[in-house]
Length: 187
Image 1 (cartoon, rainbow, N blue to C red):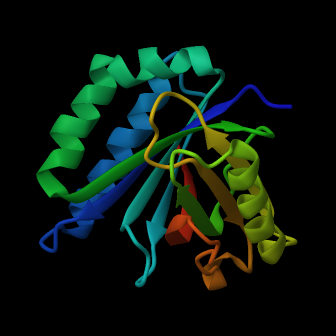
Image 2 (image 1 turned 180 degrees about the vertical axis):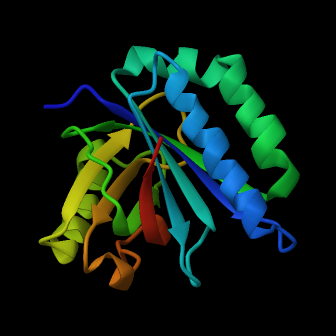
């Protein structure tokens, strides 16, 4: 069982955002590898029909690294100086991964689930596992939310050939967010 925590930033870009600005965002995210709390950084550049334009993936070694990462001036500068000027919409998630995450270049999809407060973690995990099974044999990572009052209760990421055809989970009381496109490991 992994101790890793995945912090995700989902970004909806303003319509005037240029490709150069997108590249600058990726460079700024890659610079965060210099933080002691960050062991890997990746990006999913979303295809049309995704709920956000970009998903940044920050892999942290442990739950105790989450607060120092989120309050580090370099991460704050990334959000305020790089993300904010091109921002249309923003959401985030923090999940404890069941297995260590290996970010893979190529096709990827990320499903994040919102759920009512009274939903049990095992319900969230079951829904994510069903989605992951539909993505098989792609490499997948599943995580359930950590921290207090999370917007997203769990996340599943799939890397590989079938990811571009990923569909939102139609699971009862869950509200899904789906980002699919091309993933790239940064740094």
